[in-house]
Image (cartoon, rainbow over all chains, first blue to last red; front, side, top):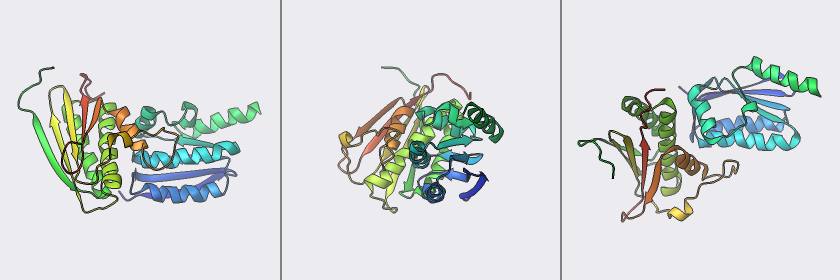
Length: 120
Length: 146
């Protein structure tokens, strides 16, 4: 399966990045290029839709962690949705993201964000 | 020393030091670890450890040169899978193959961190005259296809 990345804006300030294929040392630079472009727009929330990702190596993890580190000081968040079990296990093994950043679906993530919004 | 079944099944695979071949290696490991009865989590761990180790060989041992060779030796034993990854590149002293913290996103080191977290035993054999042998062991722990 050839690797590709789709980028869209779900709503103002919320970018959606959807990679498809294996994120490894050969494909992570492609993902990084797309993510860097998104980060230049300073989104409030960057969502990775991982439904099309069947494998992620440390090179791919690095791209996601880097995005989190760039957004966090500005109050931004990185969230992941639709992780396949094998990909989810990678994040679990190395505890790369807190549980509140990983969601089964976009709807679940929306409900979480709505909850935060109501508290403000 | 634990006694293990005689006649181990050993598979030797030689691949070019090109990352594009690692996808095939991952598929092969998926099949082998499934047949051995590893849990889904353990299979992921073995696949990732070998993928990261080969990536490190290409990047550090061979300096990104894609036309060298990597030898993978997989030995199936009753209670474990033994993996040897041999390269013929620049020796990197084990003291310098340090595991980098997850949140340190500079290049290198995260793969080593992953290997050490994923496998039960990991050691670097620097004794070959040329290159390095990375030896790793994953125990079955009687988990079957969870």
